[in-house]
Length: 130
Image 1 (cartoon, rainbow, N blue to C red):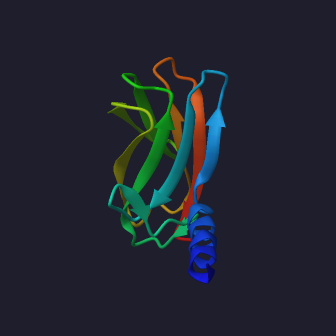
Image 2 (image 1 turned 60 degrees about the vertical axis):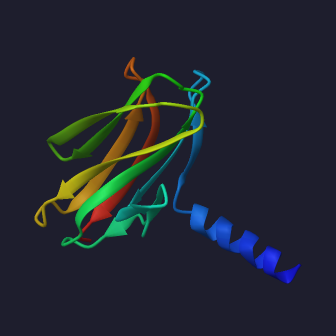
């Protein structure tokens, strides 16, 4: 019994880095996390701040209620924006995008998850190099 409780506490701590699932009235829910890599379809080394020399980061999302649709990850830093389109093949569906982070692009970053109509479903902000 004790090991089960310990596992439950560990799982709660691990999920604390994830933005909560959101539903903008569309019936679609999204969880988002920013991390250094993906292992076993889950993000690793998630955080809200990363060193300037991080190299690259991943935006991981789990989407429910959008089977057969497309979403986008919009990575933003100052005037720089990259949009990555991702297919949702089931529900729930885990997917991710990867972004190279130049060492001199420090400060606040943002990733928005949008549906095909451009509605923001989830947002995650983080800092690099501060």
